[in-house]
Image (tube, rainbow, N blue to C red; front, side, top):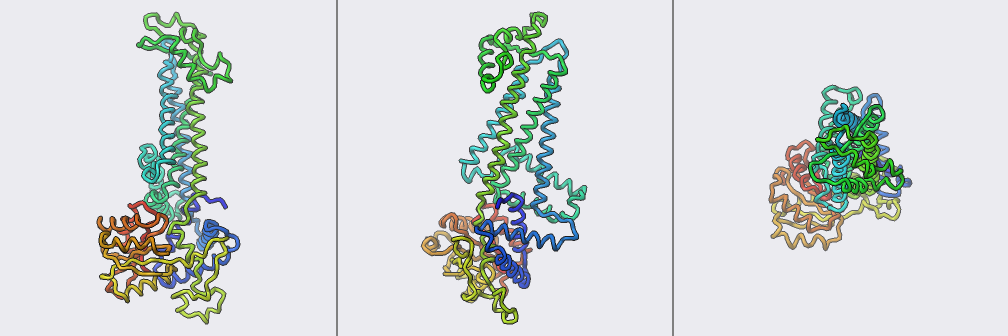
Length: 524
């Protein structure tokens, strides 16, 4: 099953909705629904990605059924519309700008031929330099590693494009209240926040659309310049010449022109591929001699060379870059990591039977939600992949802050709502030097996740964030570190509300670490 960027955006949206649930009843209902979805698609989905996409399809059906009387667009559709408009506008503006610039530059009044050198620099050399810059971006993207992953944040052109169409344009739509977004402002706001806040987490996904749109503008500009040049040649009596204050020889210019024409000179007739030595000599402008000594057939010999230069050095390479960007985008989507904690938690919830769906509900008490019964556990049917519902966790908690009774309450909450098996609890002091031996034990433990418990009201100061990064650095790269936030350990209720301002501060602080395997979770 092929996945699209809008599918990942919608998947993130529905997961965010589920994560924001506070009511115990809503959480139980959500868990039962997820389990039912798993039972419906377990035989069709043979991979984790397939299971997530099947879950997404059913959640979309539920969403549209609930909002069948309203024309509400999902965030993925909103993004697709914005991106389509962006590409159309870039293509139109690039073509218009290139056409008008070439047409005006080729204005010929009969007393002074058009300077070929300036024209080639503007419409051939400059696009080649921008093309080289784009190739450097691609090479750095492929080989640069993590530090250069968010490349378009360091590119003025890409930053301008992304800001214009993912910030300015949506605000204009909100101000004008366009009919297509009239009932979808909530999802529009989510789409904007996703692009703005999670562009680092999904940097590979958002890089290529912006890269493609920039290439579309460059392609359209060069195509417009080529069209404008060709149209001018057809409807006007054009004259091209060259001049230089330097002691440039006719033979030297001929060698340069012949070298530039190599890409097409092997199949284009020599008379059209580039001016001959005699034509170059005959089109050289010398002010003291005037124009009367220049022959017409020499002055018009440049236009095929100019058009072919724009085609082969500007239009075709940009077209290749567009195709490359599209293929790279598909490659990134195909290899997108669905093992990130955000998606892994959904898979675990779906495959962890907290109650027997087919059982008589009258025989299932509230205790049935507290901890999965061993007799109810079922094996996953997703190929040879092990059942993710039995994943083990190592819990890190400050023994000076959390009492044994409080830790047991936290463990019960983890097993109930995160569906993890807490295998062991280690006491920490939140100081890396003091906890060095404890942290070294993480790699020795046979666990799938590590959860660090902390009070939400204590701000994530620089030292604490540094401690978290050191703990994660000591762990295997693909092993998630969860930061589970609770209320004051002395309170009976440890639940953290989704609207807690301290929770938002923590999310922003961890987000800046740019590590998708460090996740902030509130205690529910």
